[in-house]
Picture 1: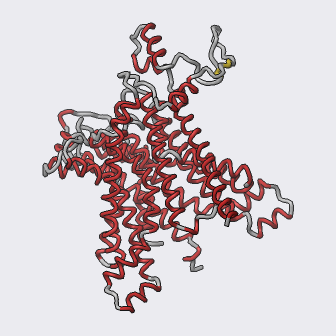
Picture 2: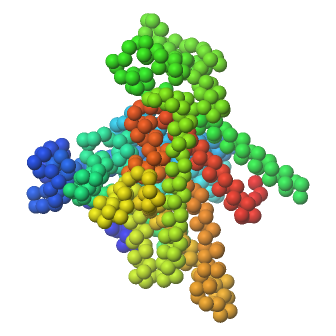
Length: 271
Length: 334
C-alpha cells in the first residue's frame, strides 16, 4: 500500500479514537464561555487557544470530530444501502425498470448541482442534525446507485451467473450471493470518498447555518463564528484549527479511497 | 444515410422527452417544497403576534389560501383527516401557470416580484462563476504542464501538494484566510462587497481554488499520458523544439478531457458560489438565497432561487452535452 494511503489510515484511526474518547480527551467543557479569556493564543492551558467567547478551541475541535464522523458514517451507510438496492434492481432487471430508474430518477436528483437540493430541503424543513442527515442521504444515494448498476450490468453476463440461473437459483439468491459480492469493491472506494464528501457537506451546511445549529461545536459552525473581521484579526487560530481538522479529515478519506482504488485495480494486481 | 439521420434525430428526440420529464419533475418538486414547512408559512413570516386579518391578507396575496394540490387530506372539524378533491383549482397549477408567464410570485418579506430580485442578482453570480473558471484554467494549465513535463521532480511534488490543498481545504476556510492575508493584513483589497473591479479577485480565487486543483491534476496526468504517445516521439525525431512539442501537440490532445470536466464542474461552481457569496457578501443569487430567502424565511424567494439555479445547471449540462456530441464524432450515433 502506498505511503499516502497509510497516512490516511493513521489520520482516520486517530480521528475515530478522538471522537470515541472525546469526553476524556477534551480539556474543557465545550460550551463553557469565559469572557475574560477571549481570543487567547495557543498555550499550555489552552492548546488551541480560545475563541470569541472564551471557549476552549481544542475541546470544541475534539467534539466536532464526533459530529463529523457521526454524520459521515450515517449518511454513507444509508446512502450506500439505498443506492445499492435501487442500482442493483435497475441493473439486474433492465428493461423499463432500468430506463425508469437510471434514465429518469437518477437525472431528477442529478439535476440539482452540489448541495443545492440539500440546502433547499433544510431551508424548508428547518435546520437540525437529523434533517441535515436526511438531506445528505437524499442527495447521496444516486452515486452509489449508478456505480452498483454499472457493476451489476457487467457481472450479470458472467458465466457463473448464467450457470446459477440455469441451475434454477432465484433472482434474490443470484443477486445476493453471486453478483453483489463481485460488485462491492468499487463500492468501498466510493464509500471512502463519500465519507470525505459527507464531512465536507456537513461542514458547509453548518457554515451556512443550515446544519447543526450553534452553539454545537461543528467545525463548520466554528469557522463561521471565527470569520468575522474582528475575530479574524484578534484570533486567526479560531479559524485555522477547525479548518485544518476539516482538511485533514477530507484528505485522509481521499487518500484511503485513492489507495483502495489503486489496490483493487486488476491491472496492478501482482497476485 | 437517411436511416442514419433518422436514428440520430430519434435519439435526440428521446433525450429531449426525458429532459422535459426531468424538468417538469424538478419544477414540481421545488413548487411542492413549501408544503414541507413545519407550521404555517404565514406565521413564520408575520410572527405569532399578527392578527387573523393580517394572516388572511398575507395568505390571499401569496395564494396560500388555495388548496395545495389536486387532492389533499385536510382535517375536518372533528380533527380527523379525510380525502378532498380540488380539481384544477390548486396552488400547484397556479404556480405553473404563473411560471410559464415568467412570474415567480412575490417575496414574502417585501412584496417585490421574485423575478426582479433574481434578475438583479443573477449577473453577479454568473460573473463570479466565469471569473472562477478563468482563474482555474489560468492556474491549472501552466501548473499541470510544468508538473507533467517534470514528472517526479520537486516541482511536480510541490504542484501536487498545492493541488491537494486546493481540494481538501474547503472554500469557507480558504476564503477567510485570503481575506485575512490580503484585506486585513496587507490591505490590498476590500474584504467584501462588489463595488470596485478588484473586489472580484478574492472571491473568484476562493471559488476557483478547488476547480483549479482538480484541473491541475487532470492536465498533469493528461500531459504525462500524451508524452508517452508515438506521435510525440515522431515530433521530437523530426527535430521540433521541446516547447513546440508540448504546446502545439501534447496540449491540444491533452485538453480534451479537461474540457469534458469543465462543463460538468459548472454545476459545482454554481453550488459553491452560494458559500463564496456568503463569505464575501457578493450580491449574487447565492446570497439572495441564503440571507434574504432562508435567513428571513422568505420561502418564495428560496423557491425562485433554487429553480433558477437548477434550470441554469440543466441548460448548461445540455449545452455541454451537445458540444461534445458535435466535437466527438464517435459519440454521435444514438
